[in-house]
Amino acid sequence: GNATASDNAYASSTIGSISGPSQYLVGTFPDLAVPNGATITSITVGVEKSDLINTGTITDARARLVKTGTIQSDDQSSGSAWPGADAYTQYSFSTSGWTSTDMASIGFAIAAQSSAPGATAQVDHMWIVVCYSGGVAAAKIKAAQRQYDYPAEQWAGYWPQSRYNPSQIT
Image (cartoon, rainbow, N blue to C red; front, side, top):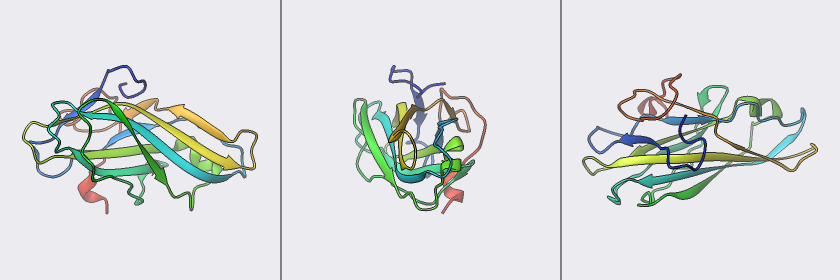
């Protein structure tokens, strides 16, 4: 799938012609092993993203973690315009309620929005850093292994598995 490496093979969505935000693009980080009983101290996700035609109108609609297949409510979306060329944005999340067990199925969901007709949002790469105490290593770093989203006409270049609609999540 796309967004697993910084290689200019994009997951993309033409969003300016739809009403509201795009569907979520979800990157998963399977088998992110954290020792049992470890205390999660920080979770940071990096997303290499861009505005294909540099309209300056694409912004995050939502930027959230996914726990055991459920998009969480902690939204770290930014009101800043997506850059015209690939650049990373980092999102830092509260770790309250996250356990070492949750790390085996953690993911990240991003949805974009734009007011410009024909604006195309692109994601080239996602990575995650999970810091914890009570384990051997201080952090685990992993690139996204798969991305899930529907419908195909909104995000191209992914392996579809699950449907997430930002308008249904508060």
